[in-house]
Length: 158
Image: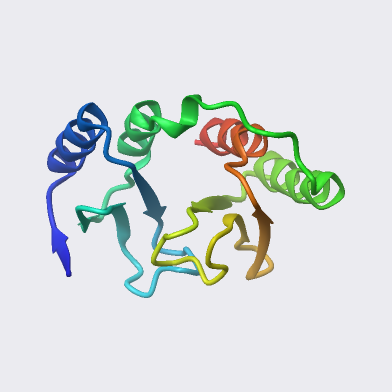
C-alpha cells in the first residue's frame, strides 16, 4: 500500500529510518519523467516499512538534496564502473543536454525497488527527454562512483 505524505513528513520519516538503521531510498519524478504516469512532481520514499509519496506542482529538488545527505549507503565505497564505455557515452550526453539547458534526469533503482525490473541488480536509469529515450546500466553492487558522477551533473543543472 502506498500512502500520501507531506514534503516535511518525507524528511522526518527518512531521518527516523536512518537513525533506526532501516534501509530506504527515494525517487524524484518530474512531470516529464518517462517513468511518471501522473505528470506532476512526485517524490516516492521506499523502505521495508512501507512506500510513501508526496505530490506537488513544485519540484522536489531541495528535498532530494536533503534526502541524498541522509542516505546511509551513500557513504559506502563501491567498485569502479564495469560499464566505462556506456557510462562515458551517457555522461557525455547528459553534459551536452545540460550545456544546452535541456533538462534530463536519472534514477537509482535498488535491487528490491518496486520500479526495478532487473531483480537483484542495482540499476542507474538515464532519461534523455529530448530523444524520449531511457538507458539502463545494471550493477551487481551499489554503484557509488558512477552514481556520484550523475548526481554531480544532475544537481548542477538546476
